[in-house]
Image (cartoon, rainbow, N blue to C red; front, side, top):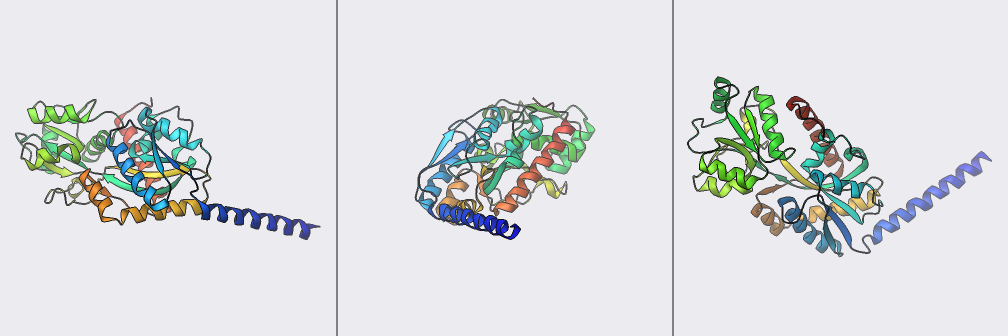
Length: 322
């Protein structure tokens, strides 16, 4: 009797696995929805639309972007977490989703636990930038000045929870400095005030500042990325002064928990094919971002690591969950 039961269960498992493989082989059989947790026209949305165009070519089906903005990307993520795990509803994850885990107290899901990583697309590079009149010419001099003028120097960033905002708090924590953090509602006004001399120092996206840096209207003190980048040759990283420092935004694709591995693999292969296209690389460079390529398992570890890192920074900064 036991042997018969075992054989029946084994046969059932084989049938289910065969069905999953057959399903994956015909995937995708209809258009795929790619949900973005931010409004249309922003940097994450633009990158998502560029990615969707290339994926449509690779998969032979339309990948349609749908914007569901709100709560720093949390609402869009919730919609995907609750979607069927069939590969037809995907989420274009961003760095804010790793911050939300500790910054929002009423999330109905655990982003790490309730999503399946597919593939990252890019890093969003950030820069520590200064008005040319600012006396410090590098990170070490800035830290020394901040310690000499404890609690008097200002540093700006875009709004709460954004990658530049968290980069400022990480910088304060690792440098051991007391510096007043001035968050702006948007990056445009922040750059305007930095150019006008109302601000001395800020951390922001490279895409918003690179033209001013090249024109000599702003000075790039350092990059927040782990390594130097081609777009700003000769500019060092903060990590060269503060070993281990790294802060950047990112974008990537995740799926609902339970999405079959065969489908995840097919999506990952499509992303890698897109990333191998020189035109795709060029388009990302035009947007001021750099490619980030990791297999699904490594992407999952990356998301978990970012979530853990930002939880420590949230605690250090005394930020209260909203």
